Image (tube, rainbow, N blue to C red):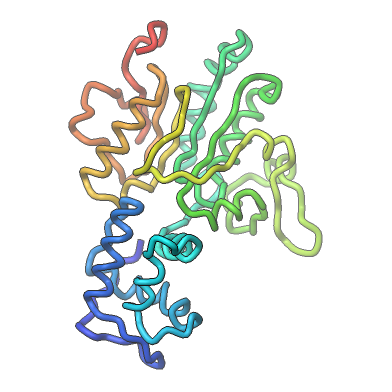
Length: 295
């Protein structure tokens, strides 16, 4: 997330006659924290203006105060979702932090293969999946090393609070920038070209492995079973300490003993979780406990 200089009271973008005060920003910041757990500071004031001013103008409103009233009301619905979408960060690409996928392929998938062939259920969660590159990267990695995966009870759940990026993930049309660093041979074998341009889309068997759903990480998690691996990378970095601890603790509760948690390169688990996880790689943590006893 960008960190520009703070605004002065009543600052307004040149060429726009829109009222925007520190009080307007504080109302937006409180809403985002309560709704998503994302913490905005005064350093984000210009970013908030830049991302929302066009919408305020398009609605024919004279200032942010009226817009905040409308977007955060109990009847806002779509406008509330639009506000959240505008202020969440969705930077990603295929095989981002590639060492995580190296570990998945070398250290985790062999166990998945053994367990899946024995009839066990395997579940992976891509939490904060953005436009889908992470979830599809997991699916590609699984198919590369376990081609028969679709024949077993092995599924990937991908969730995000931003419904706009989820729609793009389901559509799954990716420009060359999303595939930077992916070997050409892998692109050719796992992606179909989209007629009329340079976009690519994952092949049907890859898409079929992933289910996309909206989910707020600070809300209720409607899960009936545990996960074998969770990827939540560069999401908690935008949250304060107590919110991060709440999310890490939640992941511990829904991971099976021996399951793995992958977090972002700048993120760290809360000290209170010491003893519940063992670090086994670069920002890769294994949940402690006895897998055989399930606790």
